[in-house]
Length: 467
Image 1 (cartoon, helix red, strand yellow):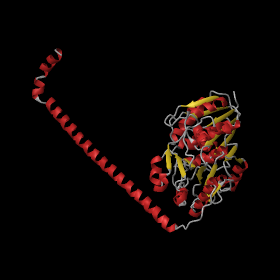
Image 2: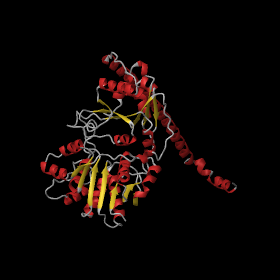
Image 3: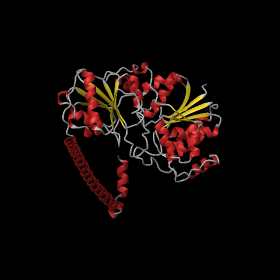
Image 4: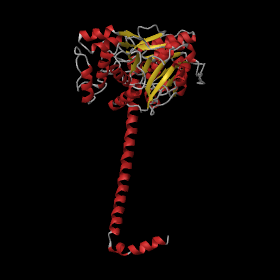
């Protein structure tokens, strides 16, 4: 039996970014471990990636549980997880990673029961506040749990309260009880520690923390699942993997492609792999859409292989300057891109972690001239040409883009209104049917209570005997 336990709420075969990140750590370390995770029956599965991991998994504890981010699901994972772990000998060390926070809550329970187990806890992103700077969660409404944790918290640390949010409690308790805290970058550590103004606790956390970036897998893993995805070799092929949301959009890329020299607008293909195809259909400009192929997400190993097929891979920062003192987010897909050997075009917020990296093509977030110049550089390199700068009317283009997006919004409003009217129509039909049923039930009741019905009861019994 191994002496190391991995606690990972999400893990292959369930297909999630955070589960894959933990799997990459195991493959990179090449050491046998025991692991406890949830089955997450309501998510997509990736059996191929799970099979690759088998040789490093000595013991698997699988908690039968659907995916859910609520407190009850977290408690169930922790309680059922401890029931399983109580059957095993004590582990020498333990590693947990979140997002998802379920992992840290279970690891915390194990640490409280087995204080000699060395607990390493990784935070992939800040938990308490989201991209918009708003609270990521509400209070847990569990007085019994809060009291139990307050009994465990050492006297020199602040107690938690009923008003504290779920994510705050996860961060705070992990900071106190974990033996080692791992951040993915220095900006993330700064932002997460800034939440706690008490110098004593920030020094305490910092002294037991380290920076470890997302793992990049060895070359062999990029060839396990050879994909038959077709690329047009007559064009420059750009690949984008993921969704768009809030302050992470493709707008800078769209702006650049829209303003590419007319002579080269048919010389590229944009390949997008996403779970939100409909959103991209509405979001991309008409000209960019002509050159775009929209695809559903790939399983992880095929994704690695497909990354090698493109000329350029696209990645962009989330805009955070209005919320955080520094950008704490480092896109995890960048580590997969780096292992593919394919050139990367990164649109970076100034002084972000990604901005500080050596990346072949970079442009500045929300800077259309920067994006256009970078795209021109890509075309010059890939086609071995020289592109002459054209006069660019920024105001005219933005008016055109806003008009196009406004039209799409109006079309979506019309569709929603139409669907709402359908719902009204269906509701009216349902109400009408319910009224008919009520009338029939009333008539039926009236007949059964009538004298003629009662008088013919014996005849009906005789009729049944002859059936």
